[in-house]
Image (cartoon, rainbow, N blue to C red):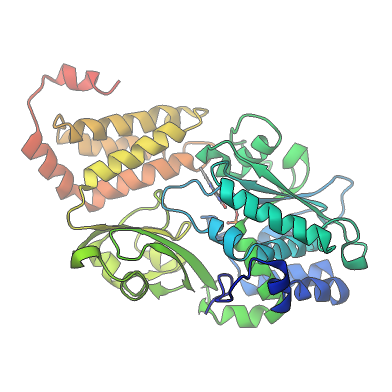
Amino acid sequence: MKIILKDIPDLQKLDIYESNGGYSTLKKALKDMSPDDIINEVKASNLRGRGGACFPTGLKWTFMPKVTEKPKYLCCNGDESEPGSFKDREIFEKNPHQFIEGTLLSCYAMGIKTAYVYIRGEYYKWINLLQKAIDDAYKKGYIGKNILGTNFSTDIYIHRGAGAYICGEESALMNSIEGKRGYPRVKPPFPATYGLWGNPTTINNIETLANIPEIIKNGHEWFLKIGEPKHPGTLLFGVSGHINKPGVYELETGTPLMTIINDYCGGMIDGKEIKMVIPGGSSMPPLTKEEALTIKMDDASLKAIGSAIGTAGVIVMNEDTDIVKVLERISQFYYHESCGQCTPCREGTGWLMRILKRINNGEGRIEDLDLLTDVSQNIEGNTICALGDAAAWPVKWTVKKFRDEFEKKIKKESVSLPVKNKVHSLR
Ligand SMILES: Cc1cc2nc3c(=O)[nH]c(=O)nc-3n(C[C@H](O)[C@H](O)[C@H](O)COP(=O)(O)O)c2cc1C
């Protein structure tokens, strides 16, 4: 079952999209459905956000004020800067008009006249592809003033990011669009009351929005039958690592991880064993081989074993992988990307990285494992935004689940430096 990346050649072209029913849902909705009808349909479909947190989309939309003097905004989040996540760009390349139609339906539902698509600056190719699709849709009267001869008007603009992971966080994203430094904002107030330039704003992921036309066309009952009812629909799994065919695979929620690896990704390279799998982008707690063998890929199944689906960016690592090195690299990323606003994240991410570095350099101490856990727990939940959690979770859970890998490294390579020197190496 494919909802977004359908097997239709040249679907990115407007005429092909139209000849396959594209924009007919928008036409029908503007004629026959009220904005509330659309919100209710999305609510009943139980669509959950695809940007990482799985928040119910319809419920989020109801937070927007219906009557207000202020302008309202939609921010379409295509920042996609988390290591292991590379699925939204596939939508810009293969089916941009379905995303545009979803954005227009969402704007109609919430009474929004301006949508910004925030895309990381490095996505040069995909920015151009989306801009072409937007230009074509403007020419045909799908975007702009009095869309399809109705009273509904909406503009869609692309806003290029400058390459900071933090700008994918919704409030940092809004600050970035406003031309300010990408610092997350303290919440409350939440974006639906105080968003872009202090006006009501909704932020949704690109994949979330691309689901909307099919939900409105086919109805919520159709959507609820796909995959796991509590987390229905499909997911664009971006799979990378030690597998034969890395790529983006659209599959129903609840698909077993091993089905993805063996049936779609061509199995492990050289038939090696799995050692660790990150299920949803680098911030998600990793899975052991035993967990990977039986896990189904949906929100509830992953939460039940202490992980989460995140962005469905799956990173598969084989038996030869140096887990401590992997974790040091991941920690280096979060240290580099911390915006520095909150002390636990600014200082803690550096501590995590340096402790891991010294373990990899053969200067580790067995107490470092408890120290890593302690530092992680002091970051988690103590910051304005979830970048702190994103940095802490992989460390806390990798140490917990793969402790023997760390112990082996410390015992085998440890050199007995005076404690003073080791503390010094933390700075
Ligand atoms: C550090 C950080 C980076 C994020 N990056 C992205 C991103 O690139 N794309 C995205 O859709 N959501 C990202 N999010 C989540 C957004 O804040 C927000 O929850 C999401 O865009 C909401 O869309 P959804 O409800 O459709 O999932 C990030 C969150 C954090 C804390």
